[in-house]
Image 1 (cartoon, rainbow, N blue to C red):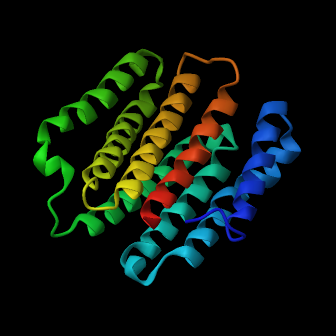
Image 2: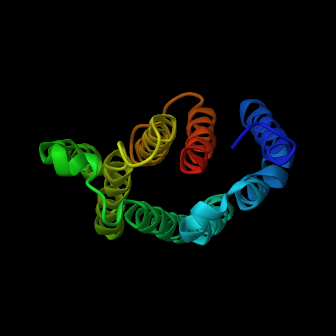
Image 3: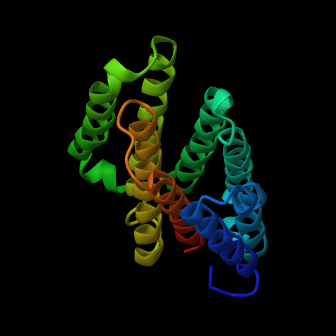
Length: 217
């Protein structure tokens, strides 16, 4: 996906969103946040090639549920529903990666020991936050952490299947998405930090873009 007129609405929306986050401007945030993923989805829809038709719609659905998550997380009392929406988005990304790798020998087939890293990270993160996570949220948060780690693992698995450029973009996007979700958890469950919203939204926006860019090849 090249930086062209199809991507400009997403870029403009993202810039306004980050200005809103940096200045804590609710008007900017409330207006642009629900538009972030739809504008990215439109760019993807019109840029995906015929070869990518198999995973065109799963990515669209992932971005749709990401939009729902963005909207729901604007209300703290709807956090669990936002979490569920992003969980579904990650599952559709995982499904997309599996479609791409079907019948191919992926990176993790050659280096299966790397799965240890993708297991230890969510265990360590949730273990650290566990005492501060409300009891009712502990299992959902643990499941979510395992799913996002699985999404990142499947992104790495596509190295050697996608083009070198596509694989790099995809892995960068997966890592940034995991980082964004991790920062949400850290900030929400007992360890708030300055400019959290800027860091969370910055890594999220770049992560989603990089995933879509990587899938474009």
